Image 1 (spheres, rainbow, N blue to C red):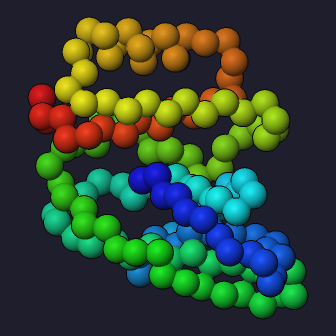
Image 2 (image 1 turned 135 degrees about the horizontal axis):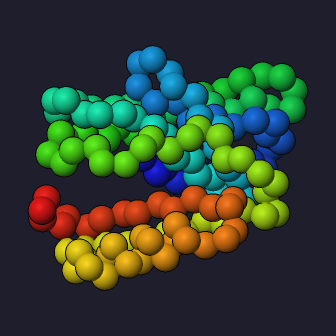
Image 3 (image 1 turned 90 degrees about the vertical axis):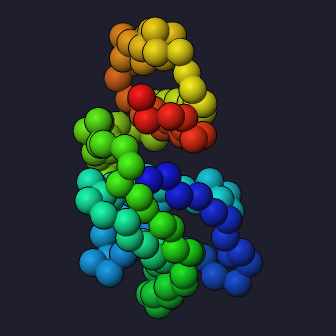
Amino acid sequence: MFVHGCLDVRDQEIRTLRVLAGDRGARVEARRGDSEWWAIVPIGRIAEPRSLRFRLEAELRSGETTTTDVGVVGLEPELPLVAEPVPDRWPGEAENRVAICMGTHEPPPELFGRQIESIRAQTHGEWICVISDDASRPE
């Protein structure tokens, strides 16, 4: 699951930032840019409807740790998990990374397949693709 937000860091300098997901506190390093942050949180297979609470944990330069609620997301098991979980770390050097963001809604299967194969065929190896679908039918 892709999560994103903005920080108000006028008073404190942040050393590390993490996204906590659910009661088990699965920690994922958040990537930051200026006052914005984002993370991809692996949540695994959804067997039954449930809610997942997200929190943001910041370790300040002073050593103090502060946590704040980000929100609750309702999860539904409608679609099967068809992709491998996203790794919680993105390998390689930051300046060489490429992020591909794709929005879809009822994509023609042949075109969608060609787009994915084109991304996979690239010679640049330090990339991640995030696909956000807007209510397409399951098929």
